[in-house]
Length: 334
Ligand SMILES: Nc1ncnc2c1ncn2[C@@H]1O[C@H](COP(=O)(O)OP(=O)(O)OP(=O)(O)O)[C@@H](O)[C@H]1O
Ligand SMILES: [Mg+2]
Image (cartoon, rainbow, N blue to C red; front, side):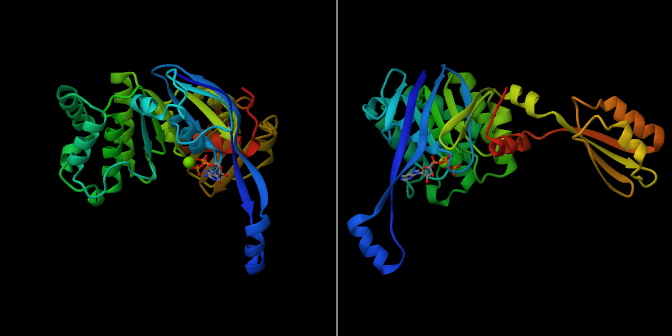
């Protein structure tokens, strides 16, 4: 469905000097620097796939989405979406795609929401029957009826995002680009949004590319992720693999009946695990350990042998922490 081959996007930036002198000089000979926002990326996405496109601020995610939608022309390489070169044939491309930029709306600000849908129906020439069926589906998953007669400018952020997603899907596009669709939403609205995206993908086999900084979005929706770092794809593959490789740290939290005492016996018992750390505040103890070196059973048995344990829980490393450490390390070996 989507083929991206050796695509790059450079932006030319003009640097001006400081102060009035710099400003005037800048008119005549501003220093030109080339910024490689996206460098030589290649990937393919099959029909019906849902792929998470993640990376730190400024990594080049939105730039990629803009090239895929045809808003921006690549500096080099080739993009085909459903056989179409997006920037060359923006009109045909627009018919087969839907886009949501979480930061702005594609709806008409002063019109009641229902009117925006009527306009889109005409633009995309959606038949009456399809329109009614799809609106019924959107109401079911996105509950648009609650605010369908209100002008768009009066909608809350969560309502507007729901409306925007429905608007992007009215013509039943084969590909949906979601650039931070859950930004600024509360926990409940995020869950509703994820459920809607999931249902739409299942129902219409829509191919979805999702950029987000919320790892819960990714965990919930995408089995495949691509990680972008300074314009380069440093990982393209399974989310579970990353978790298995990088999520080796576990956290054991305990509540004891008496204060924990740091002792040499504990250190020598677990000295083969160089990653182990222990923090305690009287009876509260938090042990972080590497599951490849220390067995949970060994650790809990030791604690139970030496203390009366009142409560205990074990947690895996958060995917959030894993991704943060990948951004930092900038290498992925899985
Ligand atoms: N029109 C433009 N002109 C010049 N530079 C640009 C332009 N658009 C983007 N850039 C630069 O390209 C880089 C990538 O920007 P992009 O918006 O793609 O990042 P992003 O991964 O979407 O980040 P975020 O998570 O903050 O949304 C940034 O350094 C940005 O400043
Ligand atoms: Mg962006």
